[in-house]
Length: 330
Image 1 (cartoon, helix red, strand yellow):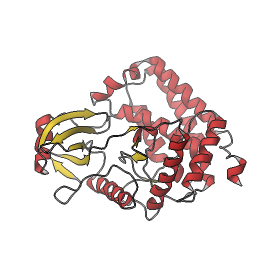
Image 2 (cartoon, one colour; image 1 turned 90 degrees about the horizontal axis):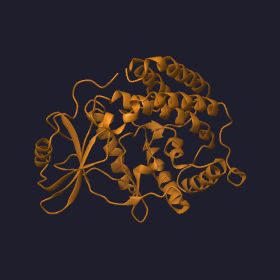
Image 3 (cartoon, helix red, strand yellow; image 1 turned 120 degrees about the horizontal axis):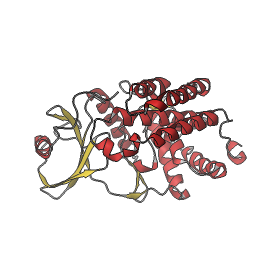
Image 4 (cartoon, one colour; image 1 turned 30 degrees about the vertical axis):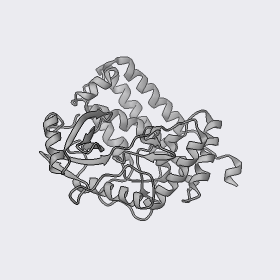
């Protein structure tokens, strides 16, 4: 099951240059493609040697209303002095359209990689996530979705069932492992959390370092539990995770209260991301960028490993949730 019809096949350099011309930008040099699977993103310089990034949204993924809602959230964060990559308002608007493509222009903001093993970096990020959520709690998204099992488990399961990528002799075993994971999730996923506007995909790759963190790519922004923006920043064995959570939540708590009951959602959210991510690749398989970037999807051994990974995650869902260090709990 893949996304139909309209795609990026007609997004050529002339189309990009014409689109930018309509916003008042004259491209002098570039266009350099940046790493992005879901959208098409290019860096360039204008005639005044200013550097920009233009992002063309994948057709039929988000509506104009949903994209504009993300832009307003980003503008709120910027107004609250949160370091985020925010779209530029050109000719009075941040979202533009050309030949059926929706696109946005950003300033080009460099930075080095966020260091996942640097506790000082983690503390800084914790503070700013607290500030992001302080702003995010003011209201919820109206047009954008809320984290839930339908989008992240049930719909992806249908995508996998319809896929011809999965070897026929392994498909039933894979679907059985997803069904077992889903049934276990039904027992441990709860919605006793206060929804807020989230970054949505806050993994280390979406944080740059420029004398402090810079948060980029709010393309997956949606409503959900606060822990969704935190759990992907924690890694290592159980003791290391507890230390990192202690640092992260103490810094976060300087700006926003964290409900520790949400820690029970870490493994459910991890399971949801696993299934959603796999189905996402399957959905996009007709995009030439995906077979080139994920060639192992055609290997039987890959699908066998996925079955084992899903079964292991089912086991983890049945274990007691993470407990914080006593000092933090006190």
